Length: 184
Image 1 (cartoon, rainbow, N blue to C red):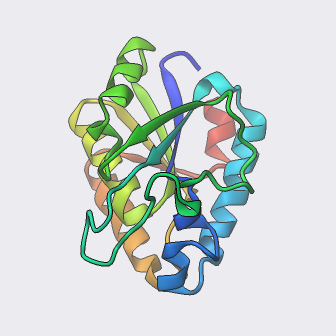
Image 2 (tube, rainbow, N blue to C red):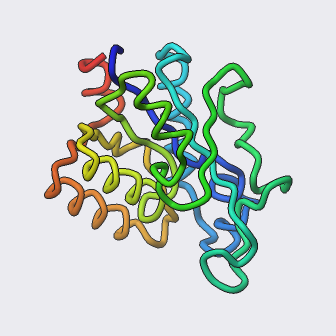
């Protein structure tokens, strides 16, 4: 996977668990749970060196008052225990929606000669979208693994809008069970 990395964005309890902050606001996260199981399939098929886990550390009320999500040292900030990951994966922390807000992330991509990003994770309309937009702006080839990108069941239109927008800007939309195996 020379020059290519799979980036799993925000697989943290606040976004992916029924007890997390996001599920409490959106009630149904069946689509997120389905995306998690497909991400686990990717994790089982790829070498750890090909995967980056991009996680968020946010501040209280960072995005709006009362929206305290992914605060360091909380349950919501922890990586979802349903995912088959351990401490030998590459973890990089960000403090804004985009992975490109993290100097560690941009340096890692540069140091590893990465030019192609396969993005999956949570939430479609925020962190996945902004990371993809910034990647395209920086000249990366971006693949969105559509069935491994999640958001609340009640706001699936946001995911579809994001996919449509990013496709018009140059991202390629793929499916984990078909194209990903063909590409790798």
